[in-house]
Length: 279
Length: 336
Image 1 (tube, rainbow over the protein chains, first blue to last red):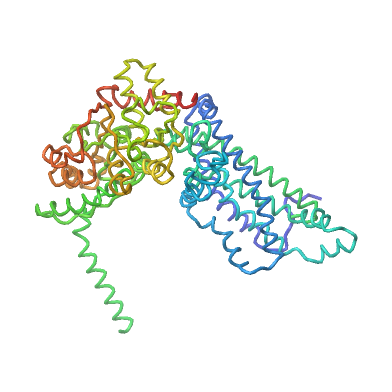
Image 2: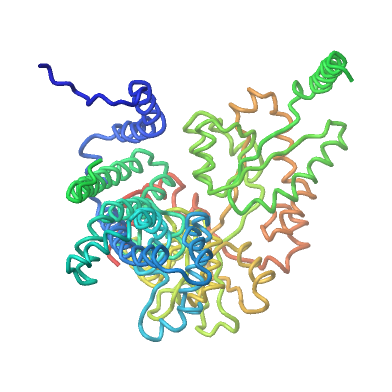
């Protein structure tokens, strides 16, 4: 018997929707991205390598990816706690807190950057107390982290929250009745179920952070080798009318982002499979 | 009204509108001025004044649209097809880029007075009231323990001129490129923040209270002293600074296509008129007109400046040697 490439679905319209999906993705995502790659081909391989292996560019790529990963990690942890308390407990003003989570989505990033800088500068509300302790936030890589945590938070909360809401209390009760203590119920039962959603939130927060420009640029300080983010290096090249240099850095960022997101997606599929929630 | 009447009414009114609009379309009643970021306020004042003088000469009213943004982004947009009738920039290389793209004729600097720059400014220091660090001249900026705020020379015209002003000072006084390199290196080692815009650097200095001295354009310095400062700052003029002219040009390709060369040229020439020069001076930019300059002598103290063309061998050389990737600026910044 001939094996079929696709599993036959009972829902009609597969061909049409797949066609639409591919056309839409092509138009919105692939064509602009291939233009980026295309522009880079103005350079020879040696020129490309010279551009992206320049110490300043390498330092900025390390900073952007390192800070974005760390910020996404921090967001995954605290975002989970936030989502948990929003779903599991009821308290006065819960609706307001729930709405506050979305604010970083809505705020223009430049406004966020200016506000954060004003707060963390040495004469700001928080900066004036941190500076005497030897903690400099504004105009350092720590400031970059803070900005990235700020903009990434809603992604984790909003992906984890619905899964937690769907999670039946009975599952935990069953775990308890089978002799699991509270910690076991959380780590062995609840966490594995929400892990795929948490990973999605992590991936989204990371992806947003790695390309972030507007909010970071005000708080970063932008010193070469210290606090220059990769998107700033791209802008710098554009300011010099070096379009292919700019797209070279973009291509490298795209490549690493794609690899990392692919990794997260694989991990997520594995986690989903493990809990029997195969997609 | 029944539906037939409505239809007739619509038809006549559309036809009427078309007839009314027809002469407007053919005469091109609008021009677009693509300009750099902080010139927004200046041209907001220039445009109505020009319109009045244009109409006084018996011409129909003209709509002048403005577009402002980072200068190289603006030039990029014009190259990509934004139909700018005139470009008003703050650096020669920006317009040279349009020459390379074939949009502006190579002789653009010869077509208007003063190498096509209706006004100029220069790089100065802003220090905190009473000048507690005693900053008088460029060498004071290289001393250990002095914090200097400068906009990023890689991405802003303001920062580029500031860097070149320091470089030119060193070349003139030490007569050696190696010494000049040491000089700008020591200066930039004192820079804690490189803002992505001239206004951003001003904010860092005034609102965030960072740094002992802000190096910026004179017009920005006077503006912040007069309107933001509340008597918190002093302006210091170094012994030698850079002449920073703001060049303008019509975009030949566009005006020829749209038939707007006459009005676009008149618009630019108006910048040299006594009224135009007066408006320029009111925005703290140094006018070319001697009479206007004299009237505002209190605003603009005499200052000793050099030009990129005469002292540093021109913009092409400077861009290649100083600011290109791996140039002097990159070298001093990577090995701080």
